[in-house]
Image 1 (spheres, rainbow, N blue to C red):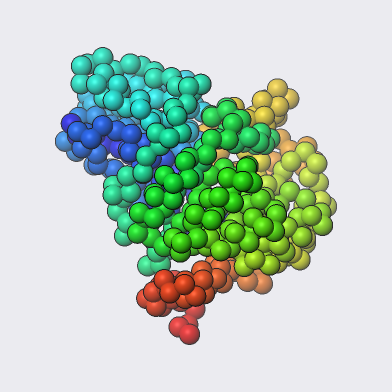
Image 2 (cartoon, rainbow, N blue to C red):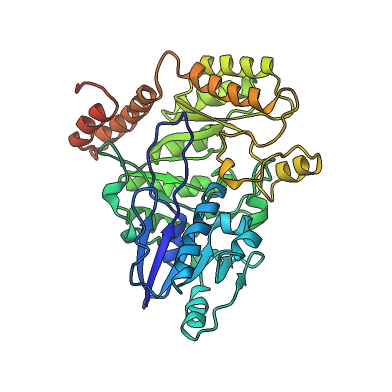
Length: 420
């Protein structure tokens, strides 16, 4: 059987330097597909879809809400040709009812141990309209090594510089943040993979640079420390979401190759400043993620926040506006208050205002978003800051003798720097 797996294109943040990371969801899903199925993968962000391809079955993997409408268009085109289409992924779960209108089948939940039935049903002409495992997660031990062999690796670089490969060591999240849908998608339970399996997968990735995409590593201190100890011999260099703010954990993370973290900056407190300083004390860079438009945000508050960001020596910053994705607390509250004015999912890109803020107009919040980007990168461009962050990993790679001189030459050209 020939199965075409598609990852729909999506629009990047307007102010962000555009680069493409290899998608994680599709290749994790592919690892659960029976061996007899021949899989062809297309990332539409970097390749064109051949709608005339000789395939038996099409799968569409959607991670983001802004992929949904494009995913539906793709499905409609294949179904008009008589080819059956199944959807899966986070955005499918979030937009299940709408997606069913464009699908022969939707798969809701995690794929491990479930794909044999799906493909057997397809072979027998009994494909179900819905496979719903939302409240029935498979044993975490069943998570296999992602099918990175399906990726065209030469496409995932920034002007020739090798980017990161994505991997996960856990699923679930015990937190329930206001703008996040993870509690709906997988429940509020932290589910770590067996450390030996996570380490085996990381060791088998030929890329020296990883992005550990877990919702947060700061969920179980003992597990976190055990994971970092086992990662030290790998000599990988990696970025991730927050690490527990404890010296002994940060020290192990640094030894294990922590390169930089994505850290939410939610106020102007001394705690935030000191937390950024502690990351830096251990040689770990920080890209701040800043969400604008919360109900306590006034113009004066946001101006103070931007000034604060410039004071605390962030390596990078990413600004977004509050986006009320379905099945989040933000969506439920703003919908109840009749403050959401757009349900066009193409607008749910995290840099378009789709609701009425409390203290200013939607148009003004849109302006403030761009002003924040411009203010932070006024003295030093985003590409210059990216280059500095890249040099951090170069130094780490030189120290452990994994550095390739070619990468520095390519990086110098990619970021507009002279070779040095």
